[in-house]
Length: 91
Image 1 (cartoon, rainbow, N blue to C red):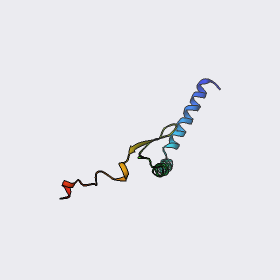
Image 2 (tube, rainbow, N blue to C red):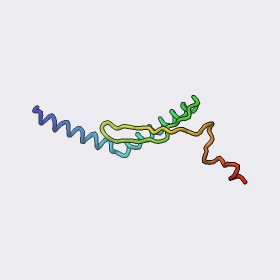
Image 3 (tube, rainbow, N blue to C red):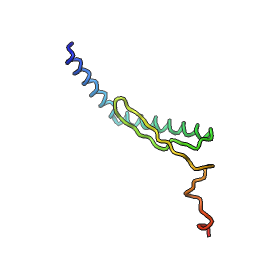
Image 4 (cartoon, rainbow, N blue to C red):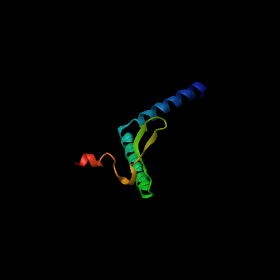
């Protein structure tokens, strides 16, 4: 098999994998697994008293597919600053 034939065979395999990774089932499975991982890690972070949580997911369906997690800091003591009214707003 010549080098050109090997390159052609490799490119055909890449095309096949690209089609496989773009299937609706594959994307749905990837999303489910990534969200499940996010929830489990956030539970661990919360149980350890961490003020950080995974807040976003970025999925890249390439070869190989990749998942990136975005992290944010939660408010201190579990109080959401946006919902707390100041004394002036209460009156």
